[in-house]
Image 1 (cartoon, rainbow, N blue to C red):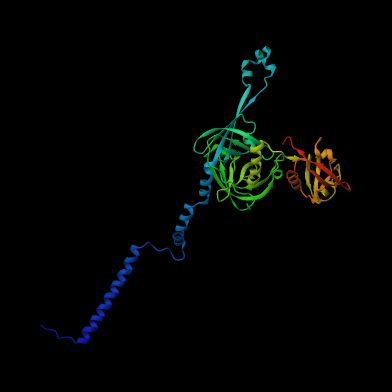
Image 2 (image 1 turned 45 degrees about the vertical axis):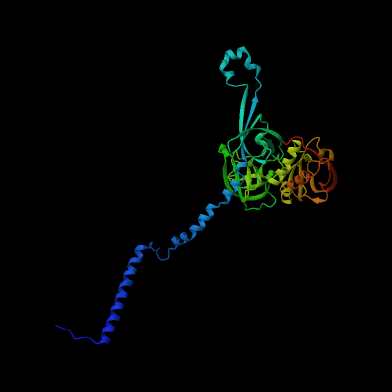
Length: 403
């Protein structure tokens, strides 16, 4: 049976329809296959995965180039552990050697109190010169009979204290370990700003090579404000964790340069620590290396910052022994006997207004002026005594005892 032959135009139209139908089938098949080969798309409005994918290269770059890691690697090998030993000898009471006493209480009672005791201490430090000079805190090595310096690579050396300055709580220790020791790069504390990174390195609680991170929370925090009245320092305050054993270790900036020496800890400070500015430490270290001590001028007064409000509170108190001028200045609370102040005629209750023509409005300011003066330098003081002002000349002398 034969079918009639279709016209040519109809055959061409059929070919076009068949081609279109085949294309539609292939397109639908492709759309069904592609999602199964790709990752599921996040729900509409949820872009967290996309953001994470886009940030992952940057996150990897940051973690692989941590500035803290770079800073610690820059200085870490120059940070040392300092172990100290000190023997305390007790005077034996002759009463305990009395036969009657020993017979009554027994021999064991006297044996419970040994005639001597060995105290051990722990601190940190850092090498400032290839010859083996180590900087640390004075209270770390003060009165120590033996000082042992341990390097990060495990080597230990006996340290010799070259000089101690109790007023600034700084000390220099010398070790003999050749002339190729790692040295901590010393920066400058002059350019430090509040909010800068602060990295503390040391041996807190005996945990060697510990690093903590924080920021500089304030500058020029006076030792009087910190509660250390026998020191003459303006601290760098930081919230980098500092614990016993950190004392003497370096405080670094983000570039791995030493900007301070961790020194003061207040138990009630809740994570606030204090460091001696490195510019001050460098000047003191040079004197300790040269002379073994530092001469500090002093006047010999105990003083208080006076404001009109503070004076008014005193004056309105019926039990107040004296009336104080309601002005800004430095109130003299006590004059040390046989001191320069006593020789100059300064009295308790005086208010110091000026030094060498410069207005003085705080005790810290007066202390800094005296500290920056020379031994034996004559200072001209303007003093308010009652309702009168007087000009007094005072010659500074050397402070003999920090306490």
